[in-house]
Length: 262
Image (cartoon, rainbow, N blue to C red; front, side, top):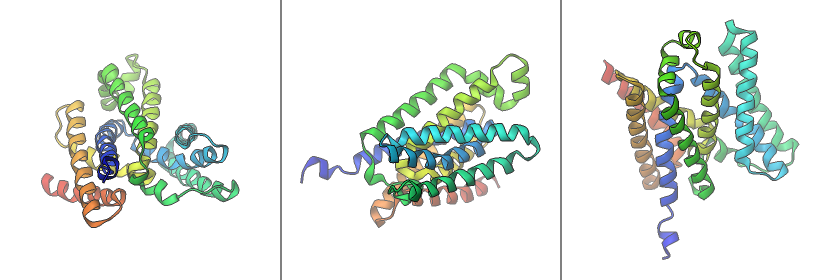
């Protein structure tokens, strides 16, 4: 048996480990900034760009990234006009962009495995996916290293941060771009739907009585890594798709967290 065949699981495992680290760390910032709904919007806005990219023969990840950012920008602009119904606007754009992406597939005459896009397919992971995920992790690290105090300030008091001269909109735009990178790079591992569970559940664990933002991020990443390792191991043992299994584990972890708090 060749080395490449014997170690077929190594690349998917590396992919899951990176995703298990960066998704919860990003989720902590999004939750403290009250922007997790925007991340859900970005994940659903990926499909139209992905379909168009496949149709014209370019990298689907690039199309998905641009489409996710456009969807988030559109929702932000519409929400400004209807600030009292912000969540309703975002959810409408979320459903509309996902539906538009599904319609594009037959209209453009292309073939896309929607199951792998929505829920992930680790068997298709390659070096390009690992590189994209590493770029997303590097971008997140740079943002935290260069703007940590501002990120904390915005999370605690966005109005006060803006009044004191912090470029809130610029940091939010950077966070949106990084979120789109994280979502697109995690697509191969858990899909554009289940990535939200990794952005959310481990972050709630990390934020519980956390004394600082960076400690919450570290704790969340550790818990996310544990979840993906358990999910990946169970998927191999029972021959199940790891993406949905990890999503179920994230949901189950909420029960554990509630008992811990109680």
